[in-house]
Length: 288
Image 1 (tube, rainbow, N blue to C red):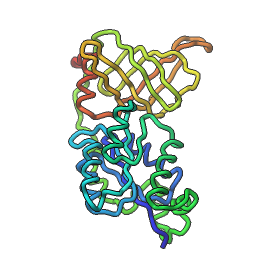
Image 2 (cartoon, helix red, strand yellow; image 1 turned 90 degrees about the vertical axis):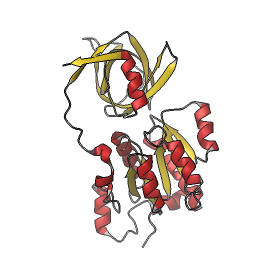
Image 3 (cartoon, rainbow, N blue to C red; image 1 turned 30 degrees about the horizontal axis):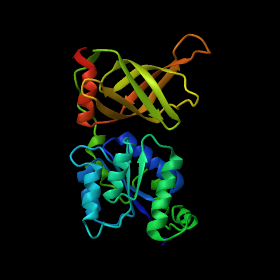
């Protein structure tokens, strides 16, 4: 039987885990992909061993990606496992910090599938001492003897990781809550980063679930459901947050075909309490 490659994806946002999982399988459908919704779950899975690569978010509640990385590098059995940090932080200071702690590589959100696969390929070819062509063959369905396992992968299942339904609490339906209406406190200007570029955005509505804003039509149009990041800074404390999201809707900002403006809706996928607390600087909620 051909050797299988096991990859662990760690992120507290299920939407981001799905994006990374689909990106990996687009290039390597034969890889066995596992998931963890936070750093604690990642530790439990990694302790069992057998992983060839870890793709981990930096900013997570309970245990950050940096803490997971430091823990792995102190464990003899995990010290050499390739670790790729995935984060919305792209400044040089954080890149250096991750590398100094032992990160194999670094990806800044939002990213393209091509970028993700390039980083995955570099990490695994180096750690396994094989060529990219050999890795491609290893990551295909060729040589896998179990038709059932291949069918599971094609269906988006988690071959060899059936406990995921029990361990990832983030995917459980949220309890019904009384609907709240967001009332903006002031004019908000931020930026939306996506794989094709950056757009300045005037926010018209915002709450913990979504943002609706107006932006100038960019040269490279983002796509629906594309991952994005909303960056904003509050002037009174010079605090900056980068909230992970995806593009939910796009429409013309004016009733004419040649309009220079777009109305954009972002759905937030970040459950980070610090970021949510920062977002609430901009609005107050009242009973709907």
